[in-house]
Length: 223
Image (cartoon, rainbow, N blue to C red; front, side, top):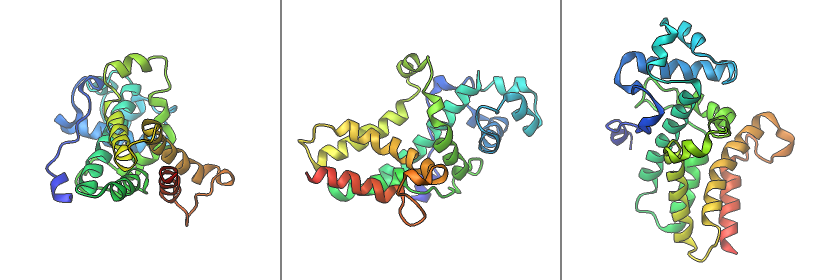
């Protein structure tokens, strides 16, 4: 899988950016250091001025790639889900329905490891951003228009893939889409609780969100 991934470009919806950051060294540095900075100080405290200082470039140069920090967060979120989707497709290929769904849950909920195929992306730090900040990419007044514009197409595509796996395992299950979207959102939420609100989750160093969600989904589909 690694050799195949190395030849693939992670595709992000074009409307999210002004200029593709993958097209230049500056663009890649903007992405690389935005991940480091948001992971360090949080999205609310993050500004293009601070990012410009980190990369030794004018704030105006960042606006040539992204019109706002919201669009940059949407870019990071879309990149992350597209990267997860590639793994999902490769690792579930040719499996029977039950094993396919189990493997899919593992792929989208497991602890992230750094991927050497994308040297300017720290996937571990990006995952922390997804756990802590991802909801800020869509809990906005503009979400309906941004959805129409296709900003969330990658995220939704993963939900559709999971939904189809649920249906393949149990065709008469009435809530396949709801269960599929719950897998993704519950994973991020349980990873958050595991670090910050340990008294209200059973997930810990021994029991992972993957363990919980496999149990939840497979037992739900047995009934």
